[in-house]
Image (cartoon, rainbow, N blue to C red; front, side, top):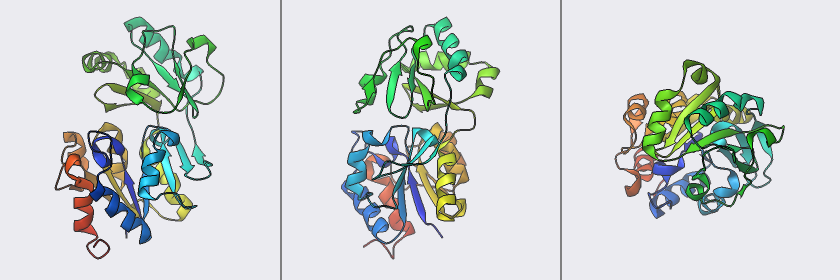
Length: 271
């Protein structure tokens, strides 16, 4: 039985203009009211998506969000962490050296703010994110000595294609590297994935992955799509995601593909 519905945001739940359609919102609110948990899964911090959580009514004491692509499981209203993991300053040394050698930008994120690395090529991440987060330009050597959630390389798609091609086997072993958007390449802890955070949340409620339905479209959604009892790829999703999924939505994200699939799956709960 499905007890949690997990949803990626960009090009999945959201339209291309970054809004949730009325059809998607209504279907998810009805299922939430019926007792099925709705969990947004994103690389963003919770304050950057608070408007979406309010729109969906995910503001009860039992509502959680998977943020930083699995590194932080957070209770929506209290902002208390259920689970948290990440990378140290030292863990980023090979990545910083790689970016410095090739002339790539990097932003390093903890769980509160973003540190654009001032000793590297300037980043466009702040302009792309458009979120209420603090950006503090910092040299790599001066980063604080605490836990970080991930690093992000934000630049044009062709440059990221070259960066991916230049990554060494050692770097792939050290980081979980995912292309979350055409202009964003993310570097997470080697074992970090949205499925990690969802597994921790399922355990918290006494459930397992057979109780999970997960929607996604991109490379950083593959883990949860593969792990879920029902992994659902968007019709507009990447070929590898579609190949890994149990099902594919009947419509694309801009046509409320999530709601269309939910209506097929839960006809008794959706009027």
